[in-house]
Length: 440
Image 1 (cartoon, rainbow, N blue to C red):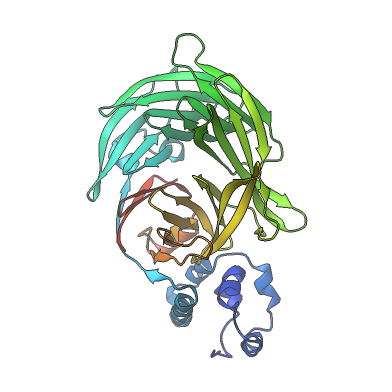
Image 2 (tube, rainbow, N blue to C red):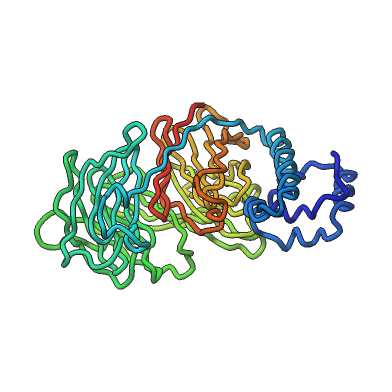
């Protein structure tokens, strides 16, 4: 390994976690050389900001020479990282749209009017405090399939969370109201207000006519939606879970022995190790909740993190967590001797910025997005041995915003990710829809 004595502190270019991943296998001689380059090595430990933002902050007309040196180091580092992580470059074409412009409404401006988006296959459901609409990805554009306006007495605040199961779309509003909309091929059905809760939902999932959600006051509800006249919503179970963080994943499993099963995955802190995830299983029927149990970890291979997961997603028996230390953790839930256990499968390395959100799809692929969309990874898990760490196929999208460099410092959250064939749909909190057509 070659070093430049005149180089700047590596902490001004890379994050501490990135250095740990890349330099994990360096010899003692190489580490000594790095220490000679930077005497203030402790500053790397104290720094947690992403190297990409630091790199961009160095750019300016008065610092072209410095920019050139950092750019050279960045290229050299990316080459080293490719050899270390076995990533591959993906070819992709970016198509960018903005829903408020497509809606062509004067009210669809401002942060409060941007609303919430939900992706399902190649469709995008958009909802704000004015209307709900369904958009379909056709070629390089978005086509409106259906649109319906809310009555003033129905919606008085914007949406906080949405979930979709077959033809039923449930919307949790910020004022605590829970709405139900039937989705048809030609449009939307009647919008009905099922119930009003004390606070808004922060997580929501549905299966058949059952709903499970976590409210902002740490109450977990298991509900049944009755389509008959009279009571629209029946409470099967209510639990106060004060220890659960707001970042949770709720997933319904297939029915067994006449009972429904729902899993709630949440961040959990262990004093002896650090942050991990725990899972609570609830078994219920149309009358009540029968039982609940907590999944156990295999102590031999439990994986900890220094910070809680920024996003949790569950598909089937697989649990996927996104972490600010540039990694994803893949785990699997299994049952043995009447016990639920969580087994660690591998830590997926490939990001250069903290991972904000990731999703596992039925086709066996994972799509993960970094903070501010600095980079996007596609992981192909098809016909892969889950016992080993999976190598990523990476789509590098450094100019994903297609705007001035200063926009990278602006906080922009990813609301949802969709994957349909070879198309990735990413919805952002500022109203933009990013579409990527990639070839593997």
